[in-house]
Length: 207
Ligand SMILES: CC(C)(COP(=O)(O)OP(=O)(O)OC[C@H]1O[C@@H](n2cnc3c(N)ncnc32)[C@H](O)[C@@H]1OP(=O)(O)O)[C@@H](O)C(=O)NCCC(=O)NCCS
Image 1 (cartoon, rainbow, N blue to C red):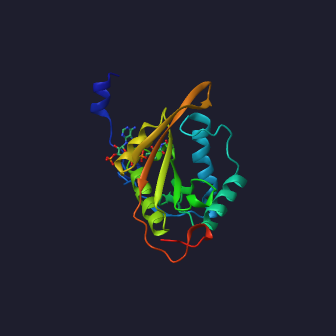
Image 2 (spheres, rainbow, N blue to C red):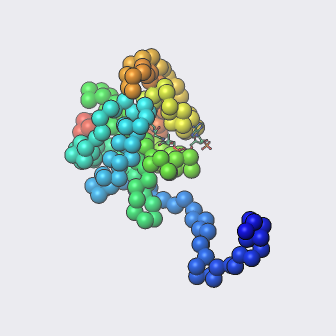
Image 3 (tube, rainbow, N blue to C red):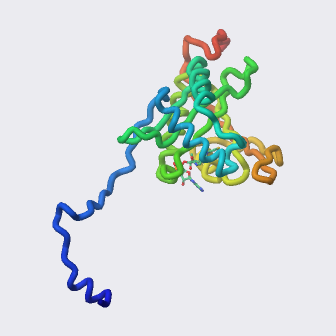
């Protein structure tokens, strides 16, 4: 039978058998991380460890490493947010961590943001990073720095620039992954911290 003939004679399926063309909106809730999110976070991150040069990690992270990181950042009052779908899946996460363990760096953080591959390109990165900036300002943080690979991370550089990060430097050939040299791009944003009584890193504030 020719295709045109088939189309003419084709019967319409009864309503209950027809496929519902769902135009479901891309919905999510942004909230602080919970221990139960760790398996999804690990899967999101390990995808980029194994398949990309956007992270310079070469070995997959274990659940124990993530548990330790979450606990450490919670102890330091450093924001760690996730975006959760209506079905309870973690679509992406964003966190900040101390830029250095040396105490004079206590108002400066380095950020990190990763979305599951299917959740990229739909505005979630912007929403998560905006929420991370707001939460960091609430936590009394002054400076946020993004350290981004100079290969394959164009989306991340674009996102940070859209949100007011300014490139402050580059380092060439400081990483080596998948048989090639990689550099880093540094972007910095001055935050508008909310004055807090409680100090970061447990030290008294002087300003
Ligand atoms: C980088 C990442 C967080 C960006 O999030 P996203 O949801 O894909 O980006 P968004 O859809 O929110 O886009 C944010 C802005 O950046 C722009 N942008 C995003 N990707 C881009 C690209 N590849 N090239 C140019 N601009 C891009 C968008 O146009 C948008 O601008 P607008 O808000 O003014 O319209 C996400 O793609 C991701 O997790 N990628 C893989 C992991 C990664 O690279 N993490 C960062 C490691 S440093």
